[in-house]
Image (cartoon, rainbow, N blue to C red; front, top):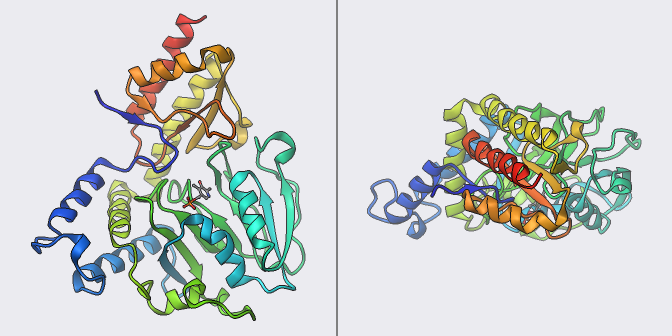
Length: 358
Ligand SMILES: *Cc1c(COP(=O)(O)O)cnc(C)c1O
């Protein structure tokens, strides 16, 4: 039976990416060698790195003159501290919006390095919405948002206006799911394992003129400048995750780029939320205007049926629907690679289940 993978992460990737990545592990580019056993400085891998970096810039509509593309270790979680460590002096202020668990963690780490102004939070209503009333503190170095809140199922559908203050964003769970004005960002980062590739690499795109202004001394590996200067090849980069990520970016481009991803993701979101609003047995947890197109969070009106619903989903091949352990309920993650057909299968299960338990 076909599986429909609604896992929040590590998550679904295009089937052709799995096939091509598997082939490269056996024999990379007809070399008679595995991708896993060749030098990261070989001309073959150098081409992979260059293509991955070029595709990131092309999809984002950014220029290599202004922005550097880095592939780092340590997960998005390490960017929670690397960002302030590299961009914020002790006596300077960074603005943060708290929209959930990931933003809370980013705020905690930033406090090690400078002043943090939490300009808005949606904690008062369990992070079920994106706050809109805030002002940018004068002289803020950057303004940090989490574009998509993987656990609570909310998403910015418009970027906040921050004037001259550069946006910094954790885009781990909605990167390249739609066109954005990426030139508004001083820096954006994403752990690969939600929408880009396997776990083990973190994409960081940084405006080069923002780096190099902090007075503290930085360990070499934690200094963005090190990786900018060496084209993200200062040390051995995670070659396999980068290769698979590059394949995913090729797939996005071939499908028609970010505009095509937006069409795909809009169609899935409309199908899913249409059913959610129609179905009397289920209820969404995020406010409708801020609902995420990537992670739909919902609960069942009769909690005693929760396990039975998950079993009905599994019986139809729909897997990975249990909500995050901190919030419970259900979560349907519908990243770029998910087909409309999979969402239709889930919607059919929800409809059928509600009819049987009316
Ligand atoms: C998954 C996730 C993270 C954590 O990523 P790691 O790579 O595991 O550190 C951070 N932010 C968001 C929005 C996420 O969805």
